[in-house]
Image (cartoon, rainbow over all chains, first blue to last red):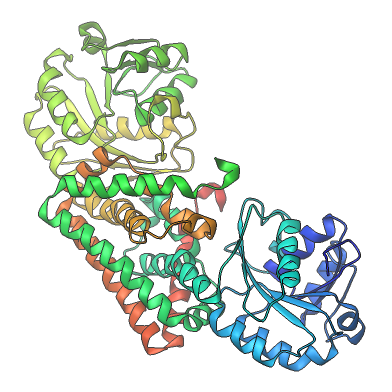
Length: 288
Length: 288
């Protein structure tokens, strides 16, 4: 299956990410419908023209005619949704997701999936510190990274469809990683950073710190405004890897601490120069 | 002395901060001159209309007629500049600075200062990850915090002048802290965050991480592009306090790690909820 304007796309879970998928795809003329248990989300999606149809129930018609299903759900719901509703999908339907952990999820999903369906895991590396469909944006993925996470159960055609979806959404870089590679990388660039931001925000209970702060502290703690239900689940799904990443970072910070304690200015400067050189690689392509 | 359009302001060190002071003040009609040892900086300042006069030497005329001197220099140069050139200033001149550490500096400066001059320490909590007068901006201080750091050697009139300067520069919040309070707060909100950003940037040497990153990692490492000469000096001038702040943060991160290891989801969620509530205080007033 190729992604065309005739492809019937069904978004399951019309929140920040599902809504941003819907907006970005509808704006380009793709046919997008949605399921969400919250009536307000479906009404909003219809009123904004983000979807042409929607339902708060697992509508047999929408499910049966879907060519491509995007599960924009909490990790554990990806598994239970497929267990409960995959019998309503037509043979040949492709399913993808937006989940931030892959190792556990992808294995379970592919084990329970009907053999005539295909699940291609993907991770859009974008978000906002506010959730909900009302905060969704068509340009949320502009300049961002998209990771497709195929396994040996996937076909090249399915993976190509998923990559085409990433291009349609406007991502700047599209990569492929195995589930294990994905979870190690995401444990570092995403989950560890959230652990750091939360710890930085809670470690000092002194009042009025906001009167003295600069942009550095604001930047490091933007993501300390966090959806505790979602992120605690993501952390625990990737526990071993995240523990390893916390240890890696803690060791480096304690190395810097030891240079400082010893008054070793040259060692501190060398570390800062390495940091400066490496950081230059991380600007968004559009900012370069 | 009150800050008026007749006040002769002399900026010493026309870099990112000195240049932004000059731009912001000149745009409002204040009379601003500058000293900088680099001919290019003075030429640029004159050509941009940021200053009405400038010199690469310690010009006796500019120094003698200055009412308010802003030392926008590296910390150790604040001390040596005053030692070398204070004899060229007129009685009653007020001097302020932009230095990111206060404890050591302010004590040394006030000990060596002529009794007919007044030094009022201040810290503008704003910056950019790029330096130099070419990157200076008149609106750099919009919405930002300004900390005045008086001691028992200061007059109320001098402190009020410094606060008037902060208002003229466009700062949103102007506070007073003692040198010790300042260094503790800045050790936390500024120096610790730079230690974290640098360590995060250098702890994982895996290649191509930039292909998989999201905005969280970019945010947490924006300041990992760091002026190693300046910041190593700032760290070492505030060594004891910064060591204490690193320990405070490391302890909190290891607490989160222990919740994760134990699979204690409720403890993780409670920490995230505290983090979310506290972070809400830190948005810039203009963003609120």
